[in-house]
Length: 175
Image (cartoon, rainbow, N blue to C red):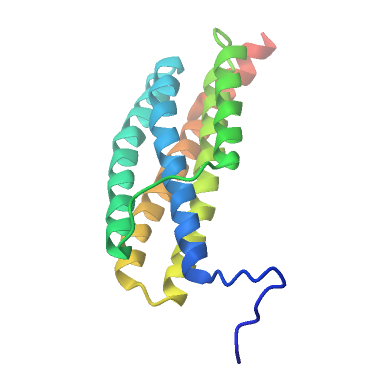
């Protein structure tokens, strides 16, 4: 069956969609690289700060992996403005400003970081599915390595919240 041509004459295909998605997540990862040091410095709890610092190093590797993906696809590594990540990161910045000195700051930062992770998990999962449909096994391998890191970071953040960050915020706020 032939692929239907859109009324506007647009013949973009799944490969184009994959490239757009890669540009989107590349932009997002670069923005996250800028946000993580601020979050690490702003965190009160040393474990929260350390988690952000660890993820900063991972994110640097994720950017390198994306650059490898672009090279495999024969296109330059370029980002495309991603309003979704801009909004999520803006919320994190607001938490840093509005809760500075508050016992709830770390709980807010953990929650903001999880919003970032959930966005990334969704995006990488989709990109992997599209790469699989296109038979791009070498791309899948690189994206999957990043997806697993994102899931592990999300698990770490959940553990931080459950290990006391949320309770400390609740008990100090009620005092």
